[in-house]
Image 1 (cartoon, rainbow, N blue to C red):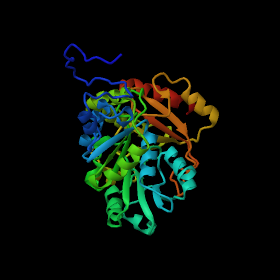
Image 2: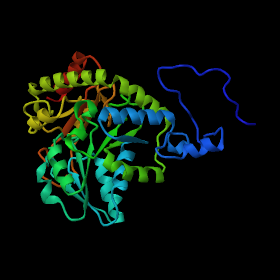
Image 3: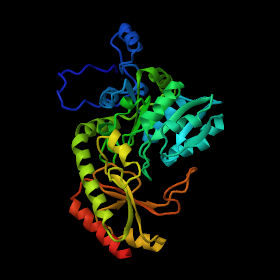
Length: 378
């Protein structure tokens, strides 16, 4: 039976409708031909992206100040898409040493299998990226700050050197979001986000975004369409809805995170708080110069290195913070562990880092929860 047209006028809603579809129907042969013309407007087939995906992509491109955006199934999928789109066998790429662990794994385990050489940069690199460039360097991949140890790169300086050699610069901008760091104003070619985190904001979506400048978009698009990358309409809908409340949520994350960081700095059991907005942070001046704010994710070290049993005693009775690997949602999360995958000297080698993602709960309750946890092992 042929699908009939809707008899009633569509509802006018604040948020866009969801389309769950693989097949898209056409009223005429001419409309079918028009759907396949560039630029694509979301009417050819389900794997080319639904209307709500295109709306999210347009919103992300606008808020980031880029040329165009494409979304993927997850943050890691976005990272892998970029690394595959901009490299080929025989290339050399430079990756910042404080990068998200699965990014490192993809380079070491997958790209290397296809003849791409991955070399790691110091986590505070800037214009000194020049000494690492080779004739076949294709891409410089940055993450500022790193999401575990929070070193900050001089992104503009590194991007300027790379651009002079026609090397693409990619930045994972998930921590700062487009509200606190505008990558294209600093010369970056490609900006990646795990939209699962602050963009969506509810810890209930897996989604990644890739925004590029005009010069790099065609190369991304060629791979993206060939590999049929796209994202579920429901995930795009949720992220688009979250994007609209991002300024309000991020202001609360920043305020709560900074208040707790300052409080922890004075606690007798705490040795160091690693928060870019604190003057004690080694790259605080770079953060203050380049960024408009700080998110609610940071780490700290205890004066006494905890045993496994002490970590359990610290974490297990917590009432507000939950043990979790992600961040950026309304629920405050805590993660404890050591960083063991670095090539360059690490400030906190062999030290246990306690990473917090400060959510939207009452700050007094969060302090009380942390204070009781510190008392249990002090």
